[in-house]
Image (tube, rainbow, N blue to C red; front, side, top):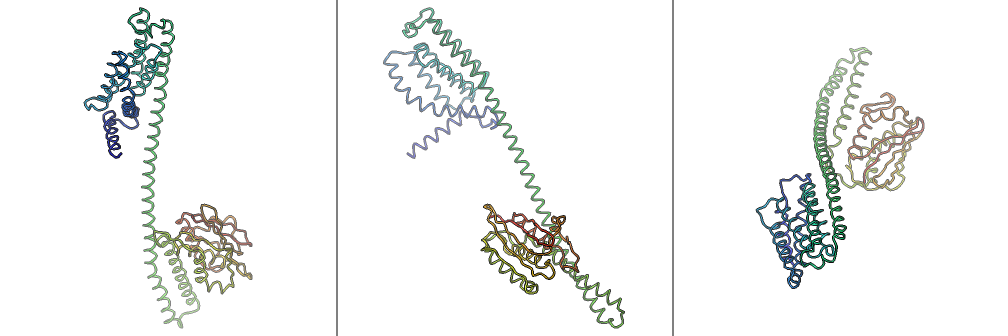
Length: 452
């Protein structure tokens, strides 16, 4: 069985190698014509050998020597087309179709319209168009006319001792053979139109594929450059933020020394200026720390891990323990949370920012209440962090995710306005979406999604 498979693979490879041309472009119609021709030769040889061998025996027994010789010649030509290495592909096609024409003509000569000869001529005409093209199709139609005319002449002059031919008159032969010629001509006209459309479609598809590959390559280059620039900006922000800390520490230190050494000699106005300078340095220090946090997003690892979000909320409540106790806040988790593949520390930061905002922006005299809700959306999880705080004006809903964007002064509510920007950056990195719905004096609900 293995030997037969090897022989069949070798046979297909050999015929394909001889009957196709590697230099022809895959988008060319000739490429597909060669493929069709090679496939036809590959399967015609074993099928014809199974039928021709017993047929040759019967032809020889019946004394039809013309048909016997034509069959032998046809088999020899087809085998040469398949295995002889010295011909071009077009030469092989012409020889192959010529051998088939020879067999069809001899069949007509012996059998007239009674046998398969006319059908063979029609089939060969179609195959000529498919394998060689429209010009050779016209030649095939011309040969059909000549062959039919020759057979009709034999019938008219009652030439030869071919009984089946003698059984039909010229009128019957003309009626039958003109149908063949008509169908041959129609095939030669229609098939090239279909092939031209096919070639146009192939070329268009190839051009579209090429354009798509070029655009994809350009997009990948753009994305690579953008990632590179983002990394440079993050590194720049990290470096600048880190370097700014030292002079700030010096400002605070020297302001402290100035107040300690000359505090008794300075008036109330000077003490106030020193206080403003130290307070400004503290706020600048806080801004730098938050900027560092923003630049660190995306540096927590390259591979996500499956995380139990119930444990995430436990860590968040522990981190915010002092804030929760100070404001007597309540945090309600509506139901058991799922396991999701994420960067754990970043997701802790997301919940921490949203919950702390819900507590920080609570209404005076009212206890902050935070609800955590998770909804299964088939392709992703949707999380909600709902508070009963002061709410956000509708015109500011899109602004709050901008870096350093604050809606209230630092004296009213502490912070730098970078927490939500960090949250959005983290969710974006996870391929999710972050948005908010809010009503002033009623509360806000922050939504974010994470892929399953």
